[in-house]
Amino acid sequence: MDGVLVLEDGRFFRGDLFGATPGLHGSGEVVFNTSLTGYQEILTDPSYEGQIVTLTYPHIGNYGVNAEDLESGRVRAAGLLVRDLHATPSSWRADGALHAWLREAGVPGLGGLDTRALTLHLRTAGALRGVIRPLDGGGADLPLGGQENIERPTFGLEAGVAAARAVPSMAGLDLAERVTCAQPWTAGAIGARLHVVAMDFGVKRNIVRQLVAVGCRVTVVPASTSAADILDLRPDGVLLSNGPGDPEPLTYAVTTVRDLLGRVPLFGICLGHQLLGLACGGRTYKLPFGHRGANHPVRDVDTGRVEITSQNHGFAVAASSLDGREVAVSHTSLFDDTVEGLRHKRHAAFSVQFHPEASPGPHDSHHLFQRFVAKMERGRP
Image 1 (cartoon, helix red, strand yellow):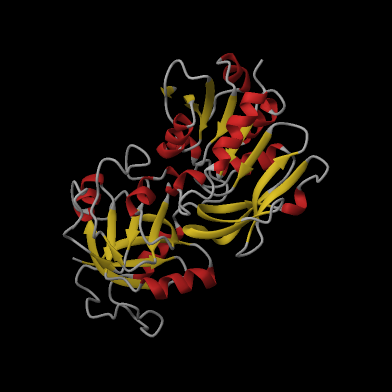
Image 2 (spheres, helix red, strand yellow):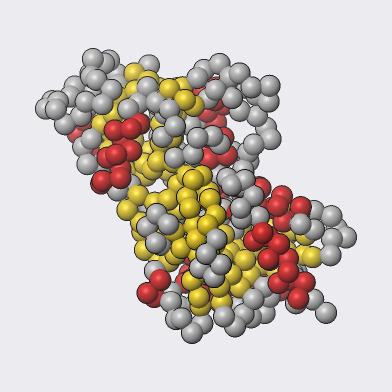
């Protein structure tokens, strides 16, 4: 079936629908990710809640999907945009095909799309709200990338633009409450020496696995858990997890992080990094088109070491808002010099904007989990 992506600014991109028929899903903020592989991890990452993901690598679906590569219990992205969909997977690990998996999940995709033109547009205009719609026969002769040269497209462009503009803006929304766990759950050996409480703002499964791998028992708690309730669990450290959207509406989480500072070691990842920045008196802002991909170089300010990192965020901490007497910027992006890490000067608390568990380097940033362990060990009697 022919389909079309319509953006809030009137641009549209024709393609072929796959996965589920657009309905409850298929609308959201349109972003792009430059990773060459990992589409299943991307689609199930809770940080993509409310977003339609464009993959810039052209060949998608060739290794299928499997039950081992999920980062959460279901597909979190609102839609998928690709250039060349491979309907028949050719990997021995595959349990099924990408298009069938998305159909079962109720999430639409659009293939045959001019993803290069779309990505260039998003880099210029910034992330835009959009909708995936069936073409309904009208405009089936439209070229893949032809947009503004067509004065009167026949598929209901005005209705599509209106639908895109009706999509809620990511700024100002508390999306963590949509993806956090309803009840606490645990992982790792009961007799592990270290106990980590992970605040679940949209935690990826591999973050929990990496903590277990370095000898921790992990208790994952809902995002709204108070500092008092967390301390009652007698943790050796607290992980502030990744998650979707704007950190500023999560005032309850900022209060919790502020109350935990100095009482237990803290390690923040992605959204957790932004929440630590807010708890330390900083402010955050929305990036034009975000950082999403597995090839982002980050420099460690103290050592000069450059790490290749995996990233997925649309907001960042403003360096100028931080009190340099209390907080040091520990990492910066070599792409745009944005803040990629923080270190508290008085308390055992640090954070990174990137994902050390994703291992794009493949092991460039795994030492951060060891650093967290060292801080927890120093805090034990």
